[in-house]
Image (cartoon, rainbow, N blue to C red):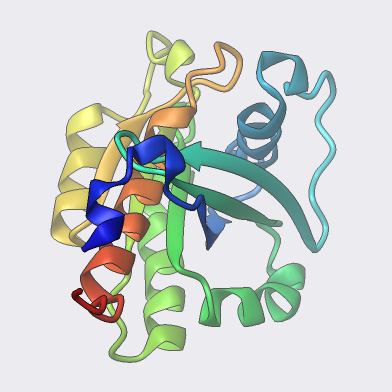
Length: 197
């Protein structure tokens, strides 16, 4: 194929769009996560303002050794039950999910099960692609925090990947790069075969 002989720099750029939904209780840090992902550490909110409804952040993830970029449309769904009706349509057509809990808040971890079950009920038989984020890991030395082992166990049980994140240190990109890579791989596995000649 002629295209196979082209230097990679001359191949057409490929942009894939991936919708990722952030889920978790209020105050676990979903909005800070989205803002720091999009704007870097300067995006860290100075004051806490709860999200009512849905907010959007966008992050471009370049796929290594390809000419592909995945545009991550990160949907930040407020954690309050009042926003669920607005969030539900996003749950139904999302490509991936990020289940977030606060390591200093054991209830937020316990409630991950409920968040997962809500997504399962809207997705029917569709597999759930996603990650579990133990957020605010910079505060892990506080008493009564959720151990990483519990987070890993929950992730493994639901076939999700586990990450520890800290928005205040801007340590948030790894899980989204993993999701972008998985989305690109899925695209490559399902794209139509090219004509040979």
